Figure (tube, rainbow, N blue to C red):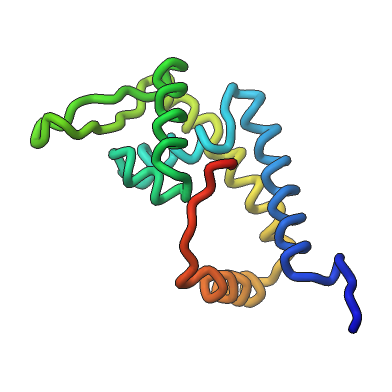
Length: 147
């Protein structure tokens, strides 16, 4: 049986993920954001998700982790949490003016990070990669508390 760590799919995906996250994290840190804070801001501002549950599901983290993240982002002045007018118990997340400025400033950095890697692929390779990843992720459950 042959085993070569660097030829394993999990190794390659993990390494690429760490490289992409590290590049993006450095760009965002210069603007006082983490990747997760960016994900929340983008999910609310650009994808129009506005409840803690929707955000946790979209980002793929557990609800307690999302709660801690939202608390920190509220303290940082990036978001506001308001009571839902239709259901007084539910909370809606809104991006503050400061948060909107961070989205406007950091969106080009996020796009540039993705473009850096996608420009290494042809359009067909990009489509094939997206389809392969979609198939591999399908029917797999899980959230991550340690992101």
